[in-house]
Image (tube, rainbow, N blue to C red; front, side, top):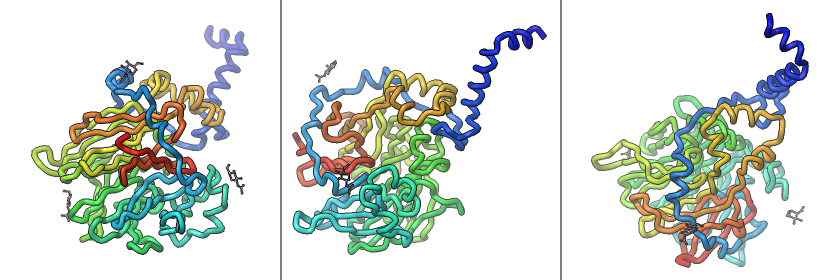
Length: 402
Ligand SMILES: *[C@@H]1O[C@H](CO)[C@@H](O)[C@H](O)[C@H]1NC(C)=O
Ligand SMILES: *[C@@H]1O[C@H](CO)[C@@H](O)[C@H](O)[C@H]1NC(C)=O
Ligand SMILES: *[C@@H]1O[C@H](CO)[C@@H](O)[C@H](O)[C@H]1NC(C)=O
């Protein structure tokens, strides 16, 4: 009784409670997570301080010495590949095409598309397809993210965020779907792949809950419904290898194929899954990283390049450890870019080279974002590092070793 009276005496308090309730329940779906079943959970991430103290930052920001190439010619070239003749790069773009660079005379040409629904009219609207406007159509046009050539056949395997796992012959054209469903359920967000010597394709399915356009929500929520899958061409069947992963992203087999690595973007780490030997079928930590990893690629020496969107921050750490705060904060009816900015989510690129034990052999930073702001992949080829990006209109290169 007394309580009720107190409340009535404080109209502002009531107003505040109503406002808070509106924010939290967001009945008008205004907030970035409006209309979504957004339920933040605690994820399995190493303590910020411990990771940052151990990480060898590149004080000279040497990645800034790189240069941009193909500006305004490619938008969102997430993954880069070279074919068996060394031609390329090949890249999957935001407009749904896989393109390849055929030298200065020919330039870029369309190599493959992933769906009959693709049309130039819908998918390649000049500048529109280089902005977030493309997000509305990428579900139809496709979004090829991971690319790998089969070293025996020259076939190109593609992990597409909407069309699953596909393959196209060495001459390109319309890709053929290999895995779009598993146990009758659609694969929602295929992301990257690698090819085992016995023909099996290992690939990641980033989330069962959110698709690529909503990938930011996977990070914010901390949900772990991602999977590592395997497609067996002999039987044309797809199998769940690992599940319950937090934003599984890049996949890379080791040189002798005794293990594979996959990145868990939400947890800022690389994991190792053993395929052979005494630890077969077990998973262990390969390395904790200072930021959010994307793809991993092998170099000729059997070492691994990892692309990292850096860095974790102290304020993020508070959100990471307190799911309820994310639940409230990201329900504020304010566009995501402002919300993200105010918690210091400003990223720069870091690329790192690791050996098979997870020891860090080299780190290149681009702290000022001179060359590349969002790096998605590092390929070492032809005496250079080639850097892909999921959200900008260029590729970057840097001679390596420097
Ligand atoms: C980089 O800078 C940090 C602090 O600014 C310092 O502790 C570290 O020793 C430096 N590393 C190198 C390789 O110079
Ligand atoms: C496309 O965007 C670029 C960079 O923002 C700009 O320089 C160019 O003029 C635009 N082209 C068209 C046709 O709008
Ligand atoms: C190929 O190798 C992988 C990894 O060891 C294994 O899981 C898969 O069953 C193998 N596929 C065939 C057809 O032997």
